[in-house]
Image (cartoon, rainbow, N blue to C red; front, side):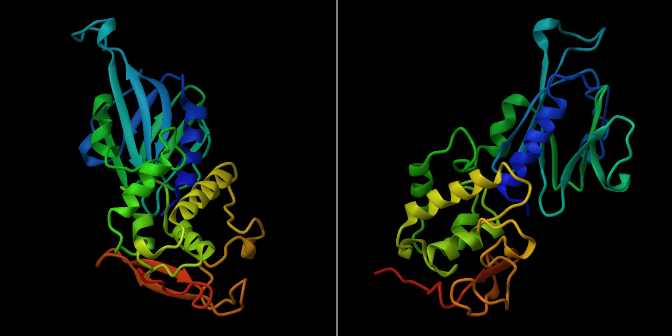
Length: 278
């Protein structure tokens, strides 16, 4: 699943490509919005909220429809990439980079076409309903609402929860996925199964999380080691059986998480001892 910095860059791509432009055609290829049409609407902006994307569109009532200039329809297109989704923007008339059978949303303007492929969530909601879809999220590591103390308080609510699971819970803080969870546990020297209450310096871990995302939001190639070479970018993530970069112990991998939602977790058994509350 894409990390928060990937979603942030996607929001910036959509914002730079569409904002201020009038939609000349729209196509929502999901059953609940198959008949929706926002043609004539103006794209106001696209912002990210954790791993969620909010594309805001204003449209004046159509000729002959009830309402006047003060009755602007204020819509928000809420999308989520989930595991396989992506947004691509091409010049109008240019060939799409993926098969049209995978398209879930198409937004077209005079100069650009934005296509949402294999999106995990597609919802068209009224602007005042945004809280219903993102209001549950904790502070966004890359957002203007970032609040370190609130994120720490959220994490501390369940001191017995595994630190990896707590980091992945978007209600605590928004933007961390499996890659950053693995890398943060390694750089903090704690086993992913360590209870939150036993993490030696939780504030330092949270600050490092923000630092990692802030650095990577400006580049398409993610790295937590500072090395951008293909096989040198990560400390432990997807490096199972490879030697630890610090001690040489083979990196281990297991499945962690709630039943039915387990995900691969990577760690060095030597550098990341399991810690228990004192």
